[in-house]
Image 1 (tube, rainbow, N blue to C red):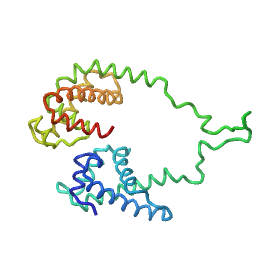
Image 2: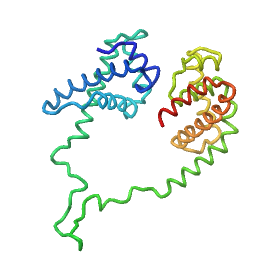
Image 3: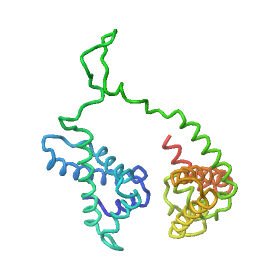
Image 4: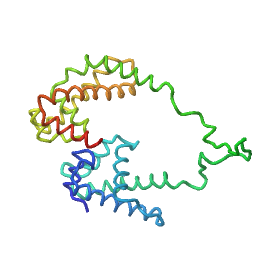
Length: 267
């Protein structure tokens, strides 16, 4: 059974890769055990994947699930027991999530007999080189030739909007957005010292900063769709991060190194 401190660490740091080795081993072991239990009930003849793969499937389901946002999924895990969630409440919710993970794994990896592969040849006539057509050959090309142009236009729009709606965010909000964007913990000493406040205030600053950015986008370019607003917000957040990092490098080197080392490790 995993330790509640390790669940809380994962909650705070957002990704297991940012947790300690002990926490990683603990939570991966939990994921493997629950994956194995559900798989044994649904398909006893199959062997479970490695612990790392089981956890990755669990974490990916939380991040990419279509039924609710990733933030809501994770908060749901820790809200089931009220203000002071117990280990049983957290792991009970995670076990329910893992059940869906295993079902999705079986649906994706083990197709029913009636499902045909797109690579399966169709017809009995081969071409001059002896090859036959497949269903995939008959599908239209999924490549969108206009995508690079649209992305370039979005970037140009974001560049033009940034001086108006992205440069005057309060300092705490800029720090919170930059640190969160890097996947680092807001509670780190270098972060709280630079922002001159505690973790709770930084969490509030992050929420307020993102809400402020979203509202400014809606007010400035109301004719754009919600999808475009979301894409523009991502580009503006990246510009905020870039400019904040330039300032941190000279004025707050400890915070700069704390954020930068994660980027270097990822590379």
